[in-house]
Image 1 (tube, rainbow, N blue to C red):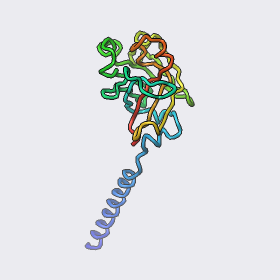
Image 2: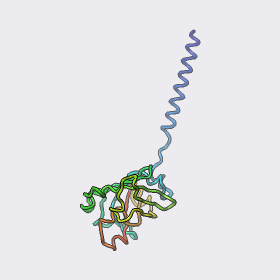
Image 3: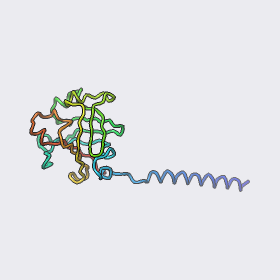
Image 4: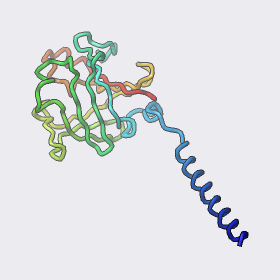
Length: 185
């Protein structure tokens, strides 16, 4: 009788160790950092997450435009893995944009095809991009940079898109880019 009990206990112990080992193996897999996800440039994997909207920068020099520097209180651009996005304006953006319940947040859908990012309005998300931005689809070739902001991945749309109504100055709109960052870790 003791022999059967010992065999049963040994089998139960072996199963427990196997279960614990299986759990520990899956939980010790290294987490992929945002820097690794964005290491080859634009991809869906790279975009998913909440990006800080820092404001506008000069396309050529990449220097932030002081009157559109929202880094102290950034907005938030969130790309969801289901293909939807939302954009909340920075609190220091023009008051008319921040307080407009129809345009803050802006919602839509997104997709990546090679180096091209498409942002679109989509009734499924109850968005109003065309009303808030003047068009319902934007096709962009953004720049992803791992070296500009230490500890961050930087995303530049190479155009003014989400905050286009922050200024009607053509020279700013033509020569500036919206800039976003996310932690590289």
